[in-house]
Length: 164
Image 1 (cartoon, one colour):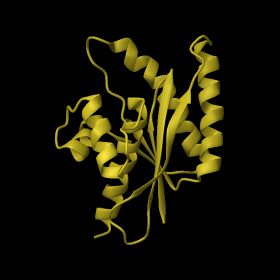
Image 2 (tube, one colour):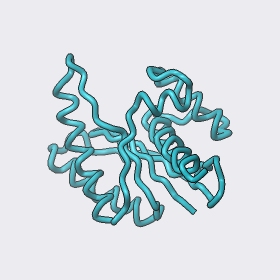
Image 3 (spheres, helix red, strand yellow):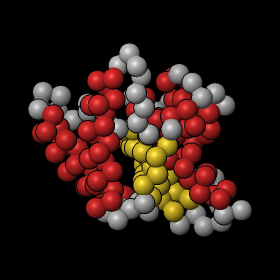
Image 4 (tube, helix red, strand yellow):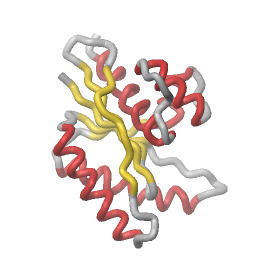
């Protein structure tokens, strides 16, 4: 049984989604999803410490076998955003490796294409695709949750099909 924790890093909100993939199965099932809300009034070091602690608790509680994290990309118009996200992503990668979990980088365009068929899908399209594929009555909200679930689903399917 594989348990994949998908993470959409952020310095205000970090989304997470846990899917389970039974041995021999091709389709994962959603087990848990939510957000880690960081104190936006805190200093950057304090927010990173909060993220580390809360992610550590989450890993201990959910017991994933793999972690999949959105790959960092930089837009030429917003280089500072990539730098700031790199801090959060670094904490996530370190915490996962300290837990001795394999970590996979997932490009957002690959995840979007896998769920919607279009690599530049909107947040709304992603939320609706995740709701549809997971059989949810409502789209996951905020969008960070849907993104994290999508990351976990995409990596779980990659694992399943690699065994064929």
